[in-house]
Each structure stands twice: as C-alpha cells, then as structure tokens.
Image (cartoon, rainbow, N blue to C red; front, side):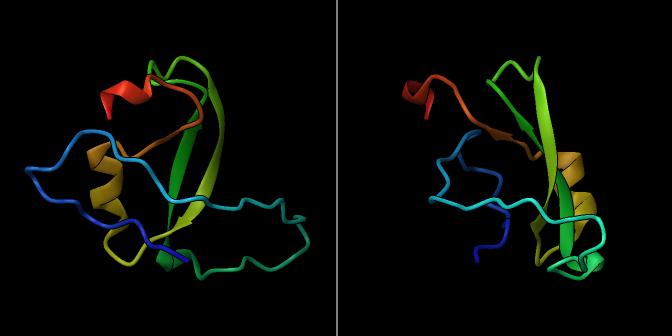
Length: 83
C-alpha cells in the first residue's frame, strides 16, 4: 500500500503512480481502511476532467482536506509526454 503524500510546492503538476489494484467491495462488506485514513479521490478518463469515471477511497496518511484543496485526482488516459 502506498499513501498519497505531499510532493512539495516545487514538484511537477502530474506524476506517474506505481501500478495499483482496485477492487469492488460489496455494500454489506466492511471498509478495508478506517474512514479517517482515506480521502475520496476522483478517477477521470483524461486530463481534461470532463468524464468522471468513479471515485475511490484512497489511503491517506495526511489530512484529507489538504488533498481535496490541492485537487488530487487520478487519470486513466492522458498525454504521458507532459509528465
């Protein structure tokens, strides 16, 4: 598991993530992480953020509000040349 971390004020706007695995969990199943240690993270189809695919609860060791204010999001497709 890799937590979302602050990359610092001088970091690139976009970074590549290591491979990750996402699974569906039934509504009757317990959450795998405590609510206070996750941040709701949108997953978009592309960098333009026009097509929201879903949101996930991503593990987060810092303050969730900082990730929300910073506009943290994941993208499935995009111009990798920008990275």
